Each structure stands twice: as structure tokens, then as C-alpha cells.
Image (cartoon, rainbow, N blue to C red; front, side, top):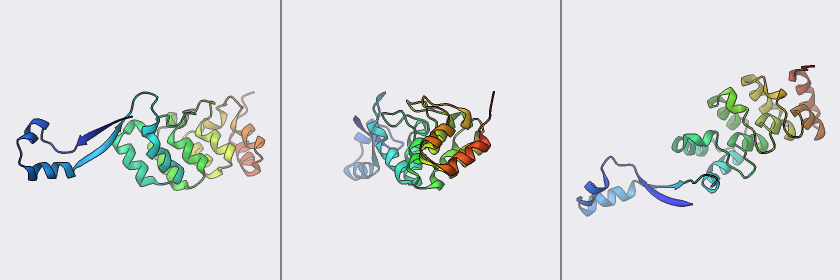
Length: 175
């Protein structure tokens, strides 16, 4: 990882050199550290991962304000997004709801390396409330298969009866 300083003042670097020490002290207090990410460098997303895992919306929101691409970025080695992590953690439905609110229906269909959408992850862990929220925004999600099958198959495989009942009602039979 490359660490760089980002100054939040409007003055240019050369004009700062001409200021007295008091001005430079003020400038250093406004300096924030930020991780510059290289392609495939997931370490910079650790704060977002932890926020999603713990259901800490304010921390995640601040991170995404700094880096708008983080909303849909693959933040784990399994190519999961913050939504995949939050749904799988089953901690805070409010966190998942806020993420869904700011994502487009197509973004909700992003998959991890196993071809699983966040909806499929909800089926695997039995997170029915998250599945309902996701379905309300993108009704196509129950019919998107992963490498291991449809979400209804995954829910049945893991023994989530309530989830299977729900998925029976929303999964379309195209045959």
C-alpha cells in the first residue's frame, strides 16, 4: 500500500511554503491520511470491510464519501462487495437497507467469484429480511444462478426452511 497525505486546504503547496510556522501548524492539523489503492490491492478496503461486517453505517458512509467507487468495489479475495459482507454477517438490517437504497438494481446483481449475488448470500445464511429488501428493488435476483445453483437450492442445501418457503413464492419457473 502506498500512503499519501491529502491536504484539505485550498492553497497550493508552493504557497504553503511561504506561510509562517503558525499557518503550517494549522495546515498539518487539517492533514488526513488516505490509502492510495493499486488494482487488486484489497488492504485499502479493510475499514469498509470491518464497517460492513459490524454494521457500522457511519464508518462505511464516510469511507464511501471519500471513495465513491467503494460502493461496488470487490473488497475481499473472494470478490465480494460491502453488500455481500453485510448480508452475510446478519448483524444489522438497517445497514443493508441503507446500502440497497443507494445502489441501483443492476448493482445489486453484482457477483462474487462463485457467481453469488448478495441475494444468494442471503439464501445461504438464511437472512430472509435482507432477501426481501433485495427482492423489492430487483425482482430478478431469485433467478440468478451461482456456480452452485439458484438461491432456492442454496437455502435448501443449508436447511433454511423459512427462506425456502419465501423463495418458493418469488422464484420464477421459466420452464
